[in-house]
Amino acid sequence: MAALLEFYFFVLLKGRIEAIENIPEGPCILAFNHESYLDWLLTFHIFNKKYGKKINFLAKYKLFKNPVWKIYLKYSNAIIIDESNTSIIRQAFTAIRRRISSGHIIGIFPEGRRTSNGEMQEGRPGIANLVASTKVPILPVGLKGFYRAWPRHKKIPGVARCTIRIGKPIKFSSNGDINKKERNRKITELIMKKIKETIDEIKR
Image 1 (cartoon, rainbow, N blue to C red):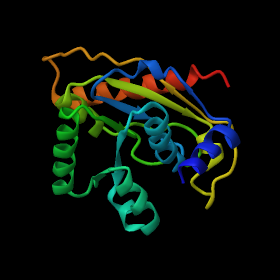
Image 2 (spheres, rainbow, N blue to C red; image 1 turned 90 degrees about the horizontal axis):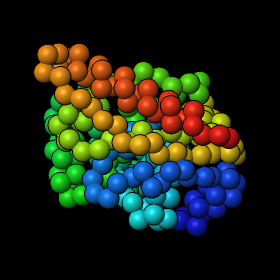
Image 3 (cartoon, rainbow, N blue to C red; image 1 turned 60 degrees about the horizontal axis):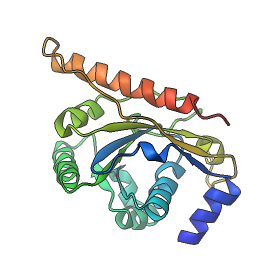
Image 4 (spheres, rainbow, N blue to C red; image 1 turned 180 degrees about the horizontal axis):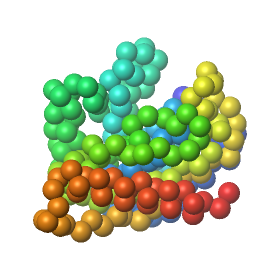
């Protein structure tokens, strides 16, 4: 499985990872645009095996109902999230804080779902609560080519040039004059803006 994924990414997809040095030592949050199932499938494996950086991704509860995805999600130690279930959300945040305190990296997709047309979608405000509660560096990560390789309307993956680029940590200025809802909106918009800028920095 490991050799197959590496061959697929580096050979068939001509995969490239840019600015890996931006990931700091210690805990952080990586925020990705969401193009394909390949996003977390390849990113978890490549970062873990090639760079020794194991990403703890958030994964929707419904994916654990699929016997194939369930095996890989458990192997990758993914954190279950379900926006419709308050209890699961609380458990997810507890798991996130516990892993961050242990020095782990958390991987999230602020859009909440894969794009249907290759274009970025609006970010969901849940990411802002995560950022505010953990207080660790958050880095935008741009994925390019993953939608062309495996768009959501295709049953099996194909081939396209794919690049992963890590942006620099985002700094948030605290402003006690705005309410929580406005704060979350500003944080979410900034994160999505930085992800888009990181994608635009990819030259191919």
